[in-house]
Length: 363
Image (cartoon, rainbow, N blue to C red; front, side, top):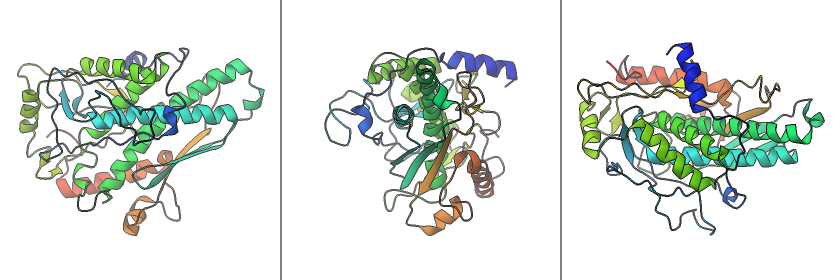
């Protein structure tokens, strides 16, 4: 993708920072994002192909009762889709990425407004996710209005970056053998061809929803419907045709044969994999998604480099996995520092196991 096209895409997808941000309410953000059950993109009992046309229902972050966050709702929380411009997508991954972005955004706003320097929360990945905040020298001299605007922009950027990096952390863990349910290994679907793109779709939807003045669930419902419509969801029959065309190429028995490792480390963009010749004579152009904006040199006119540092501190029972994912002598993984090394190693292992073309859709 040429630089001009990427610039135009960023302008089209990014919403101006001057708009008011709503996001989660305090009572919603008292709970971390709830679990939604994803499925591997190959034949298995959890795979649920969504029919079309589909009403995806009202998004539900959580309800006002002390439960797992589930309650009366018509939300379609899980299922697989194939889209003309986004390829295969997992709705559970999309919704969790949306909620993750909003949750971290809310936590960052609270922390920055009160002068806190550390945020931490747990996850089902047996990992403590952490954000350390280092306030720049100009912070104490900011006027009330400028500080409020800057907090809003930092929280949005930080929420998107944390959601994307922490979501991809699970893919790294599962590739190395981590799984939650005994007897149900997840390595076969680590970095599957719909995971990273689903995270990017969720991040994009979340940023638009948070900037909307509408209640969060309402805004997500509207923006998710809009995004999926723009990607072109195909029928259940066409989904199955897409699966059949890449059977034995992208997926096999209980495993993905190709892995989508593009998290934007090279150029900042994530490109979906599209099935060729699904509709003869037509080859839609993929919707390329920008990854999180990691350029902190100019945020609201201020240099905010080094202000936020994200880290993942795993607490795994299997020491051999810790040895594979942690840098020597370290107890935490810092995505900005360690992901390039970790992804390079994963790529080598994927190619060694599945062949030299296992990280690209074709050949």
